[in-house]
Image 1 (tube, one colour):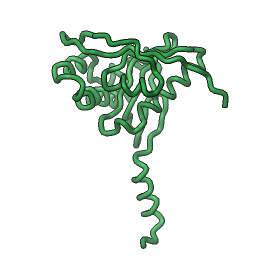
Image 2 (image 1 turned 135 degrees about the vertical axis):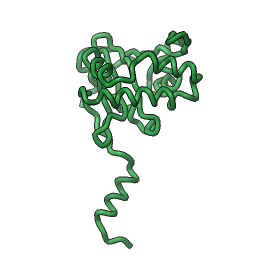
Image 3 (image 1 turned 180 degrees about the vertical axis):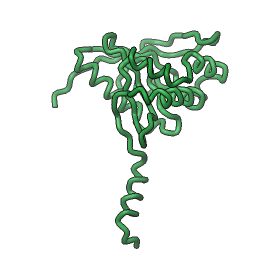
Image 4 (image 1 turned 120 degrees about the horizontal axis):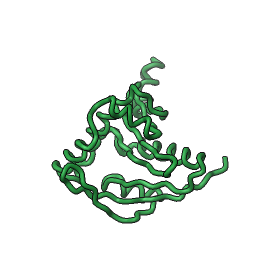
Amino acid sequence: MNDTPNADAGQAASRRGPRIRYREARARDGADQAEVFHHAVMQGAMAHYSVAQREAWVSALPRDASAWAARQALYTTLVAECDGRCVGFLELEPARGRIVTLYVWPSLARRGIGATLLIHAERLLVEQGVGRASIEASLMLAEGLVRRGWRDLGQEWVERGGERLPRHRLEKSLVALET
């Protein structure tokens, strides 16, 4: 039996997994956003898209911190932070009710980080009086969104760097919940 309380607390924390905080993005998150995007596409999407498609996809946005920081001026950007680093993010156009991007570091995928970012985005949209959200989702994201109440409006194709990539258009009615 271990009588050291700190050891027990550390073991309990490791069983729960990493501690994730959700917040609005800061300019310093740009470098992490670039890496999350790159790795989410190149590793996370490999079961759904060819190497050529993934390479074309990542080439559509620069792997540069300043470019991602500049996007924060265009979109409301929410991040999931672990140990002071951005490990997932979502870009949102509130005026259009549109979720522009949603990416999570591949080794942390399927742990609820993306779902929690979506919950925060939906809440922000409802607070701004938006009744419907939309997203153009990758093949890897679309199925999970449908399970979470999003309606699939059909598949479409987008061209990136000479490659055609399939994605799904989805929408969701948003309802304010009383608490």
